[in-house]
Image (cartoon, rainbow over all chains, first blue to last red; front, side, top):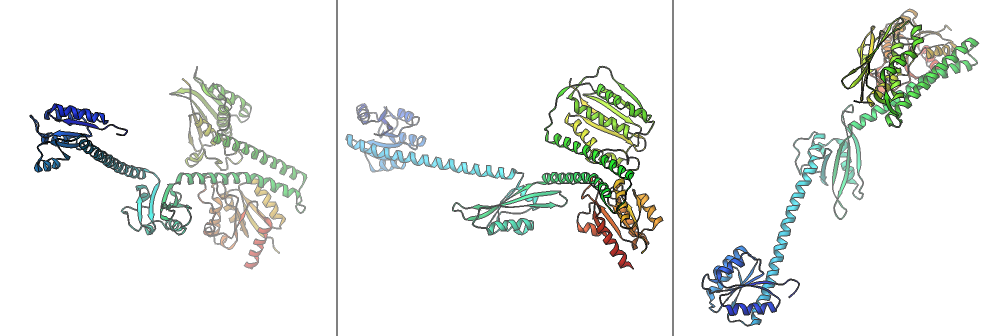
Length: 491
Length: 133
């Protein structure tokens, strides 16, 4: 006997035969249990997983047929033999009907028994094999079913649209997102779909279909709703069979609206920068050309005037480039910060002191108040200084002569709040809205001679927000403006 | 040949002065304004033979509005109006005149990029004055 020893149960009321058979089989490598009557036979045979059972037909308590029925019911894979001296055709038929493998007439020789059992064991192995295969197949089917539904669930949950078409352009698979993008509501599997898709999508699907040899994907950016409201990237890839031939096209639709918007904002910004750089350069170039032009006569005074005006334009240009570099450093977060405890009242006061001479010259009065013992703000001192230099110098630049600047610092909630109020020219609501945009400068007769790059407040806002603070503006046209800076303090 | 009078409008005072000098060197009389209101007043008073307007001034599309007003005026519609632009986009501006359609819609006689190519402008003006005679 090979690897595993066959397990046999012998149910026989005749002790000599029971024990003799047991010894014989054990010597042949079987594991043998015995039962001395039907009751015990049922008890053992229905609980132990025996390969084979040899059941005596005639027993005093329960007859062998009944034992067979019980065992087969519980253990259908146990190969059972009915052994009896009272052989009859009917009993044999009944026994096989109930699932007995064979009928062993008594008395039997050891060889006869062993032959029977060897055949029976082969049969048992076949039964177990097919049982195992059946189980595996069932498990596999279950797995496939689970896999399919899992795949469906995944495809349906993808935010990108997924749509598969066959060579005829019929719908093979799709998810709700794809239907949403293409505004289709009642498409069904098997339906010819190409004509219901945007023309440009149909075009690239056909491109893939007509490009049968290659595994190349094609994509296109498609504006599904105008004015950048909905822009998608549509990528169509061939679906190959195992032999490499094309059986369909999978189309993936990705929403790239946000990306396109950013791209647009970026190119707008570049365009603005170009314009802002070009104007002063053009002005300087113009002056130089006039001075150099032989056909235009200029006096030395005129030339001096043109040169000093050129210098001013170039100075402003350099400031603007510096501001732009600062913005770019902020955006790329390359600037090293030195975070320290900053006393905001001190920063505000020192900025006001710095401008004292100029303020006096213009007759501007300063009213400054600060609460006592305010907590410190953790920040880079250079950056905080820049915030207040900008706001306070604006309050001076845009103020009227003999006006007032009111500066106050206090604690409110989690913030140190600093309000800088001027009595200057103020802003119209439409200007207030755009105040923090890059290069936005309020242009009117009153602001014409006030220098500036148009980047200062944009930088201020970025800086404040980088410290999780905020800036608010109140303004009344012709009356003045108030800038309120909130910077969180460390508790 | 009588001297032609050109209305030049730009809110950049440096550029305004330079272009005035350059156009005067070409033999034109130049009257200037640096804002929309002043430009309309100068236009009405001086009755120029042509107008050269910066597109972007204090109200961002002031040049366009100005061109529109001049072209609606009974006298203004008889003179050539040119727009100057150096930007394809400026913050807050609603329109950019980037495409030819947009330029066509703004019914002017020509567009120039800043700084003004004075020779080219003078050539255009001369063709215009010749054809009108």
